[in-house]
Image (tube, rainbow, N blue to C red):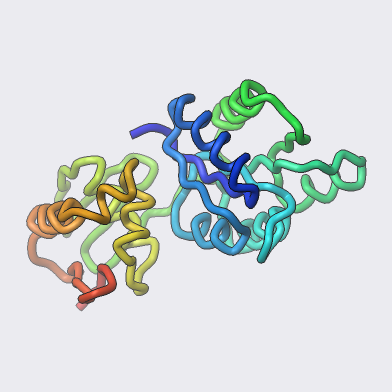
Length: 224
């Protein structure tokens, strides 16, 4: 899987253009149309980089950024803005932005800035994700059950990580497809998700944490 980026832009035309450009640039893109959705995604998945439009319905990009930083999300964030006064730049940077890009801009510059953000050392190492006797280290992608290493595929790792980050909440099928699969529609419209969940359950085996199916909704991981 490629580098996953969150793109939040309320203009559908620009969002479509940027999404296609980012995908051509080798990124796996989660594209959302408003600030509320952007914050939900940032809190659910450790993006390697995020691109937020400043002006969005629901919550502005700066509001999303402030709240994400408040709850400890450290993904590098680039703000897209038509505002280019010194006061605006200071506000964005003080809110926790790592970089900003003034509209209009060339896609090549956006890609260059994202590459520069990826080269920066991480602000903090991700903590271990644990529930019961299941443990996942996001930094090394290692999974253990009762201290015993378990080998998972990239998709299975993605599913398990999302379940652990969301627990005790239920992760619906669309969220799983959005975060773990490149083609969301294909995953939702087939039994792909069910097959991967069955394989993940089999590899984890019995223990003090288990994956439950919530009929008609999705899945969650719970501890006995």
